[in-house]
Image: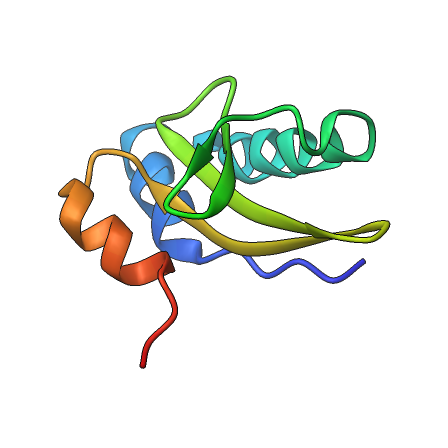
Length: 92
């Protein structure tokens, strides 16, 4: 499994308290790992399943393709909802 998470969130949380950025990354990876058991049970938003992070205001947008969980975006929920929608919806 290959996962790329933006370091912007980690930098932000690390600026609040040293080490919090690493905890942020570890928490998001733990949330993503939970999809091995719970993929498909989350509410669909704009055509994707949305997993809300347990510890931070972030959401993981994903789809299911047979036995594959495809993560489309990990986004800060504090953004304008219209900006989130534009980010995750396919471009024409």
